[in-house]
Image (cartoon, rainbow, N blue to C red; front, side, top):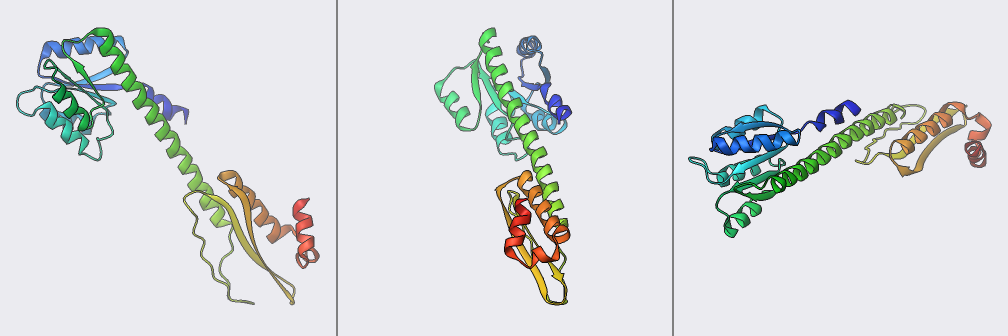
Length: 240
């Protein structure tokens, strides 16, 4: 887990601007924030870079020859793979209608040119930190879901297989998305008794599921014949 999170601490910013001098200034500011960067001089290269490099933030100029920044922003936000990447738009034309259009299309922020160093760095740093926090949360959630799936599979292995004799018993175990403490089992005791049990441990998650698995094993293998034929005896043994 720690190595996975550590890999997220090195953020990369994609700079998209047709002006080489502007790109040079932005790269200088990003280096001061200890951020890595990729750069593109036109909007046509953006998706190719996104497909080949992990990008945590895009800084995108609005006014570019060929494909404009607005068109690139629209293309990125309509792409299921890349739409989560935040975009900061920038332009020397500081028109309110342009800012509104960018924000409505999904841009995270808008920075006017020429850049004021502290404002530019503050907005970039804040956006990157939010992205990294989101990535860490997503990574932890993935790990948690993997562990829950493993626990769900373990619980399923503790359940009995369908039988034909002395009774015909079939069943289906369909776990919910949130792993719970549900279990069941059955066993034959001599010629006169057949025990069937269904247990529901309070709560959800791995702890409840593993506790249910322990109860399942106890009822199937450790509980004596005399206790099994008496509900009071079962409760007494479980309480102990």
